[in-house]
Length: 217
Image 1 (cartoon, one colour):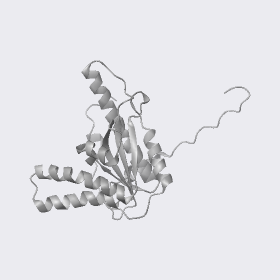
Image 2 (cartoon, rainbow, N blue to C red):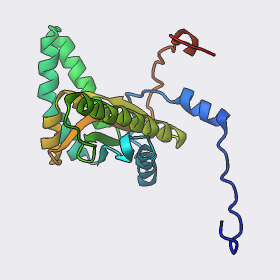
Image 3 (cartoon, one colour):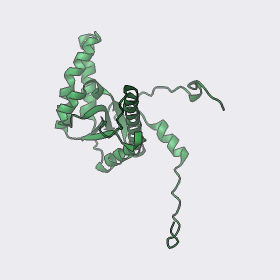
Image 4 (cartoon, rainbow, N blue to C red):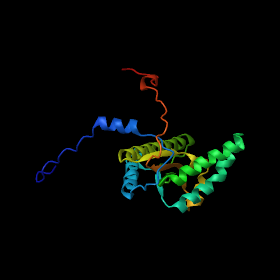
């Protein structure tokens, strides 16, 4: 620091115990109460996403916030036919298809807030060879996942539950058209945010030691 300024106080260090509680406490919620999510929390969730690592600091993500019933209805209706066609390709019985469609639609309409996370590649580095170009695109998608994880953890840390839905991946053009988005965007994920109406079933996690395939310590 310049001599005429007092030294800056060190930043407070976060509690590792609290951080571990946030990681283990986050759950994937599919049923929400109708309580609204405060605008301040939505802003903090998106801000947390912006602090994720990204290739060359490009931040290749963009957000769309949906809280109005008519907007969520428009999106759910637009995506519905794609969902139906995908389920029919799986040769599911008609009753199963209708049940799954109703469940997906309900998740969109019940959640007090939805945040659509889209990939935006205009600011990425450009390469003349396909190998590096593909790697650059993969890095951007990886960073999008880090962005979403930051957002989910931030939501939980602020007392809000979330659910990660990948349905936009199967019909990105439909989502873009339904919301009138820039066609250069590729929708990847919908984050449903709100207060859980029911405690979701938690899937068990394998311990990290069984995931290690090489360790030279």
